Image: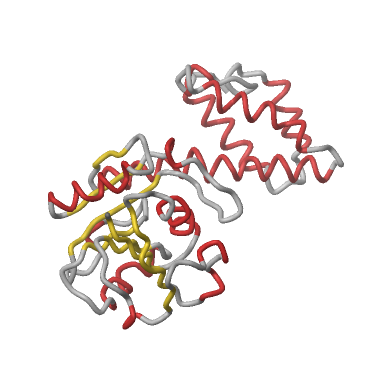
Length: 254
């Protein structure tokens, strides 16, 4: 039985807790958070505390707070020589305090408290300074995911950078598309099959092979029409930049 304490209860730890506390070989023995209101009633059987001094003993302590706060928070923990990990994609393991054994337990996915996810398909990226802790984290990850990989902080930083491009930036494009359609009383749902097919295509094709559109084929008339439609929009510069980036990648001349 692996005993786990969650330190902080944002989106990542909320979802991790939701899946780990259902596993027969894992015991979520406590949730620490500054505010009890962040903890759903679904977890009311798990002991809660908002006091660092009341944190109980566990095999793994999982920090799930904002990136900038991880270092200082890990230094404030009142115990020593325990395995303390964070869940951040972009933060080095080395920012954790030397008072405890260091590690990372990074589920590569976008999380919201309002939407449950299937962890079996989510890669779990682990790292630890102690080889035996790597074994423990792989074991913990294996209870919930079919893909657990050991990667370094440097590798994880690059993976997180790529994830920002394919998730956060792409979602911002969705938001712009939603805004354009809403302003013209057109249903965003009309784009959903396109979004679904675009995502599905790269399961069998490379992104380069899947690329289509006016910039890829250098369709100047369509591009000029779009630029005209965006002439008074804050998105005009972004459209130009993305079009130029695609043209450059695929060797199209201006």
